[in-house]
Image (cartoon, rainbow, N blue to C red):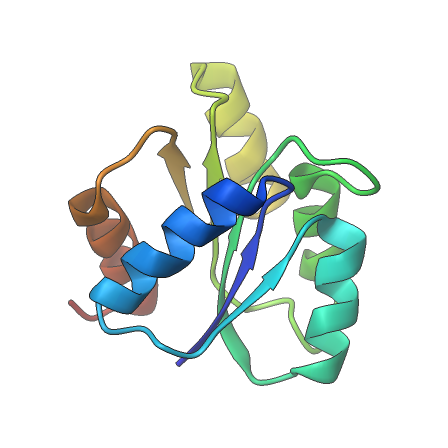
Length: 123
């Protein structure tokens, strides 16, 4: 399964990718913002899960999610938002935009594993 990690923090991308690797997911791509992520997706139409931050330069995570949901190619790809924005209204806004699940930073590997299992339907 190919996963795309989108976060403007290279440290956070590294943490997420290392966690994914430990969970057995080795095919991981990365991007530093929504615009870069769209370019990566264009080159990798077989991405089957996207993990994105909300607050990023160029194109934020919410705009990125809304853009993807309008796409014929990526409209159905599961998206998990991983962000520091943990207020209930933020979560509702993200879910309305089309994210499939939501993780508030900081998170544990177990939380990431559970959220991925929920959106892809396996453990």
